[in-house]
Amino acid sequence: MVVAGMAVCFLAGILGGLSGYGAGLLVTLFIAPIIGPKALIPVISVLMLINNFSRVWFYRSGLHVPTVAKISAVALPMSWLGAELYVQMDSAQIQSVLGAVLVLSVPVRRLIDRMKITPGPVAVYGIGATFGFLSSLIVGAGMLIMPMLMGIGFAGPALLATDAAIAVSTNFFKTIVFGALDALDAGHFLLALAMGLCTVPGTACAAWIVRRTSLHLHTAIIETLIIFGGTMMLFGFLG
Image 1 (cartoon, rainbow, N blue to C red):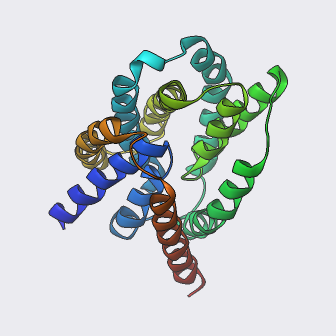
Image 2 (cartoon, rainbow, N blue to C red):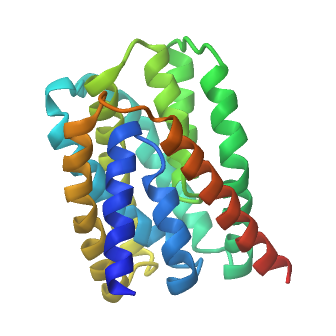
């Protein structure tokens, strides 16, 4: 089980490093049955803090700090509100929400990708606030940020680095908030820390091969896993 977990995290690091999408969702499919839905978002917050920090480092030449600061300014307080709501939800509610989100994330992502978004200042702040709130409730809220950044002209390493830096600031803040709300104990923190470190070599591999391979196969595999895992979570809730 330990070796399987390390392999999943390594693969998640590669997939997230290549596309900026899929790492948290893939890890969720593996650890949700192990730690339960209630502990999932706090654990994923720590894990993705480490994963995204490594992505910032490997693509640091493209980082655009002003954009990170602008979006984080609205995302952080909204993530606190989302965390307050999260700790009030019971495990069955969380499992049903997560299952639905995993299944719906595939068509929603495809819809967002097809939309030609050119967000103005108000839209940027609105999307940032929505992302912050949802990031404390569900896995995969980051899918809102990537198309927005693309809409204001980001691409390549600049897109990957800036998206990752926004995730770093948000997940760092969420880790503190979940700890203060007693939703993240020492055992789960250490588990998330270990799993997060296992994603770093994968991110390094992704930084080396980015732009050298097609992401179509990766996308198809991830979407299949996400729909399958989300469906299983929903059936578990309904059963």
